[in-house]
Image (cartoon, rainbow, N blue to C red; front, side, top):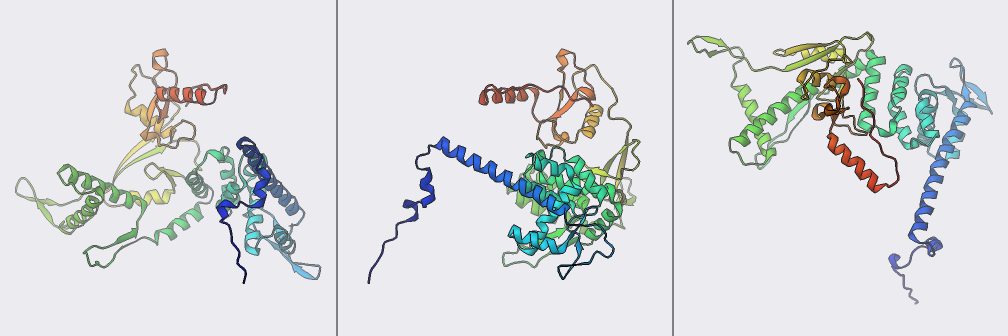
Amino acid sequence: MTTSTIAPLASSPAAPARLFDQHDPADLLRTIRSGARSRAALVVAEWVAVVAWAERHVVTTPEGAATLTDGVIDTGVPIAGDGAPLISDHHLMELVSVLDRSAQGGRAFVGRVVECAWRLPRVYAAVTRGRLAPWRAERIADLTRPLNAGAADFVDRQLRAVTACTWAQIERLVDEAVTRHDPVAAEARRTKAAARRRMGVERPDADGLVEVHGVLDAADGHDLEEAVRRRAALRGRLGDAQPLDVRRSIAVGEIARQDLTLDLEGCADAPDGGARAARAPGRKVVLNLHLTADADNPVARWEEGACPLSPAQVREWLGVPGTSVVVRPVVDLADHVPIDSYEVPDRLRSRVELRDHACRFPRCTTRATRCDLDHGVPHRDGGPTCPCNLVPLRLSRESVGDVVGWVDRVVPGRPVRRGPPVAA
């Protein structure tokens, strides 16, 4: 019997790696970078070739699209959204085979490319110019495929700087597009989703604890979170040293017991010895109505949830008993209303927050309500305290100066300048 010894993998690198034994780290980085660029260019070239192939295999007549090709029934199939062409099913299978993908995965890939080329031309142009990674464009195509043509065009026009958008922002943009351009479908989806609301309390375990889980209306969830947060914070101020999560769980029980002891149809003692109806504080809503010439915009925005809403959802929330509503008409956010002082009053802050939903610093997504308001032109240099000269920034002007200095030190020779103030 003969025996053989196998060396550990760590001490015996693969043979192809020895091709680079004479390369220093800088050479290796250049080789890797060149390979990455070549790989990206090949993927873009594949996209362009798929689009050229699709143009040659479009079935232009949906009626009676079934034809006989090479003795096989060929049918035009919709692999992208509304407005994209039907593609020959027989030839599509040939392409999927060439792409070396599964039947389902290949159809999905070609459908995403066709979706971008026909329904998202700006996104497709960003891919072909190397400004947007193809895999990101594929994910966007998955989101827009169920949309109608108007909604898809709206998303395409809004994604001019798609590389700077997070997926949460893109998903909210798609939701807004549905609400704007297909309100019937948006309301049907909202009504269907509302039927999923539930609240469950499991059986107690051996330690006397229970799991509580549920799906709530967004506004109800917000109200519950506010109540639990306030009560847990109050317990902490009163001396409860338990962890915050424990205090929050106790707060839920206290809220429930308070409701059980509240006689909604009974009376409470009044100071004069009589009786009065017992009422719990209700929901408070501030409704900003933007009075504009765009009467076809059916989209509302919820500041706390940072998401678009349909008018039906707003009406349902305002109809909850006990809700107090404050209506603030917003006539013109670009109105020039300067004041003499440096401090920004609440009325001007509200205008800026309604105009700019987020921090204006590049790529910062902090809500405007959590930012400081900086003067675009410094007040000491004559800059007015006016919405046209106020910008929400998470970083103060001094911090922005520090960032500019840091970039100048880290990347010497790179031109760095402060941008002009943002006008309303």
